[in-house]
Length: 258
Image (cartoon, rainbow, N blue to C red; front, side, top):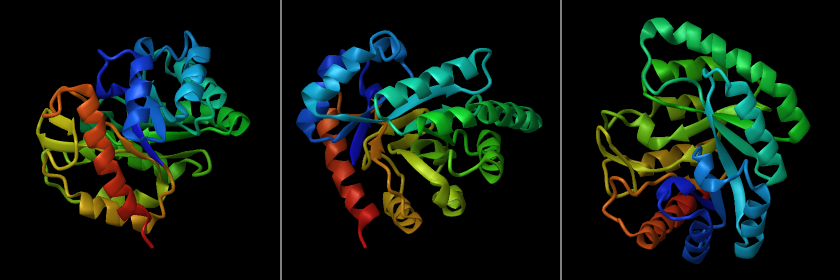
């Protein structure tokens, strides 16, 4: 399956996004954490209608950070919405993008506590939670520690290529070690620090290595393009989505080849 996040351009209304995404060839669309834009909590019937009109599935919903006052309630909302839309994965951030070393244990404890509360809901709703790697330092250390502890039936990793390669090119040790826990991906390229989430081929990331590792991991989820208009050279929404689809097709072939 090939998917793209609604974060590609928030100036495009959600109904127009569905049409652009379907015309480009995608099978799925992923709802970002900008709930005001996608309206998933205010008018879920509208989302269902758009899915039917454009024959698109929702593969993932992007949840919130786990260390906010209302994180648990918001993530439960995401899980119920995912169930109603037949999406199988809710993506969550463990904490802020950057944290200091002395906060790793604190953020880990919070993440585990939230996940333990979510586990019964995951069972009930047939939804899995994908914890996303953030800054490839201490924030991602929180993710790794959690994956070592949490039940793989309900919790996995969302591998974000742009996050993993911050200040890169870097090695792919995260994907090498935890590839078997990947249940969602956010695919985009990185040009330099603060210039990311662009279409593969615009930056320096080695997608040959990423697809090789995902192939070895037997990843079965969507190739989800999390590209945005901010830094890409493809400024026109239709062109951006079409270019993202072109690359998604190429990457998918490499990931699933036998």
